Amino acid sequence: MTGRRFSSIRVGLFIASVILLYLLALRSSQPSVLSRTIKAVFNEGHKSFNWDEAPIEDTRLPYVELNQLIDNWSNEKEAYSFLVAHEGKLVIERYFNRRSIESPNTIKSICKVWITTLTGIAIQKKLLSGVDETIANLIPDAYSDIPEDDPRREVTVSHLLSMRSGYQIPDEKMHSLFRSENWVRDAAHGKLSNRPGDEYFYSTSQTHLLSGSIMASVGEHLHSFAKRELCAPLGISIIQWDTDPSGVPFGGSELKLTSRDLARLGQLYLQDGVINGERILPEGWVEESYTNRRQIAPGKKFGFGYNWWVANTKAGPVRVALGNGGQGLAIYPKINLIVVVTRSHKLDSRNHNNKTLNMFGTVIPQILAQYSIEY
Image 1 (spheres, rainbow, N blue to C red):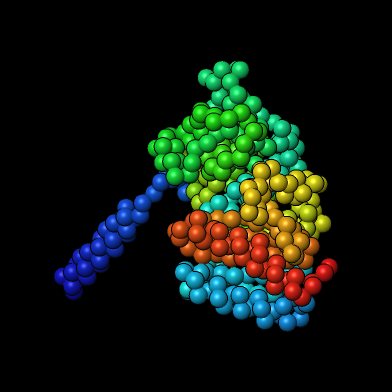
Image 2: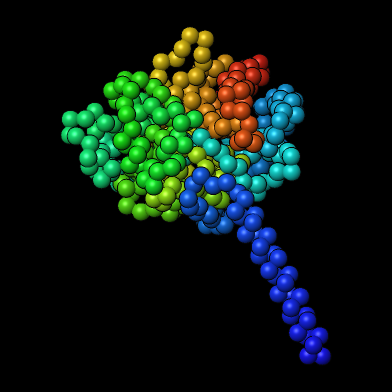
């Protein structure tokens, strides 16, 4: 009996060792640019806001055409979800390619609007004086060896929100930042291509610099601040939000949310920053965020506000948060409508992002305008 028991123990230890080695190998095989990851359990926290659900047939929306659009869209490469919320009710919710209500989405640059939202909350809580506050004043250590008369000291919160800081590090060259131990400081020390406020240039490094600045202004980790001040009242769960080596959450990407939680973020803006009677964002913040601050090139439809793509369409104004792979959150304020689409974030960004902008800015408005939907 003793021999058999000893043999069983040896077999058990052997199996446990194999499993451990497999898990270690699997972990080491995952490429990681970011050094630390903060994770939250799905569905943790207070759920103050939730969706009522209603069949789209009970609305005045052209449901046959919208469902046909979704059918066509779902046939494209690696489509994950398509949600439509109307007048505070979820009327369409469809998932594809083994995705479900609980599936996380790496929303990539939609995270920039997340940072815009946290900036507004910091102002509402009087932890940040306003968008004219200079970044050098918020994070003085990052600017300590930059001369007092250097124009980099003139960069404000508003400049970073609207991509007009003068810093021009293209996203495809951000690998130099990834090699650093202090991303925020290195972003602050980047060269200016023009004076702050003069010219629009889309760059994720600007939003990460803002993330570090807002974290300094609120006096706590931005993850915990977001969970308490944004996620709790909206019922959002942060599934994952990666950080840089200094612990600053990635300001422009690497946030994971469900499709429903993306729609909840849209609902906050649709309701002018108020949820369940509580003002989350400052009065006027939503319209300020939507104000175009870049010159629109001939033949182009979309301008750019505080990380929102903005346009006027046949169905009235549309406000879009856009993420790599053609992921998007669209708000149609005139129609009280929210549309969320998610797909693989690894798809070609330019091609699929343009397709999504065209769908939000042209195709859907044409469908809605055809039925003369007025509210």
